[in-house]
Image (cartoon, rainbow, N blue to C red; front, side):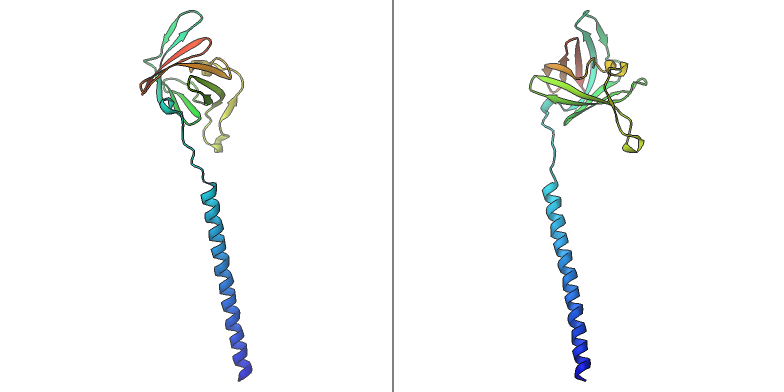
Length: 171
């Protein structure tokens, strides 16, 4: 009968309208997610030039007394990339450190120091506000600590603070 056909046609129309609304909502969501993903992705790249790399600390010269500590047989490294220095000592129980830094063409300034405390699940890295023996071991006597870049090439780096000269060889 006509009433049954009219009711069936109405049901088909409702199902098609519902499908259209779902497909439309999915397309809008896909476009919105795509726009957000592409607009919020900002690739950060290092602008450090020759400073980036894995540096072996070869010696520390005291500018106050003229003495030199030979570090060449020890495994003390600064890994530098982007705005972070990972300082590591593989021979003893010295804490692994992270340093935030700023630089210009002729200077490097350690602005913050952290003890590497592993992943966030372990509490994350611990900020240091006081100078520790572990910091001194890596040549950091002050926070912040400023260094002049006396030399920087593809194979060697020499940094001078007010009290120390750190000599590195690229690993």
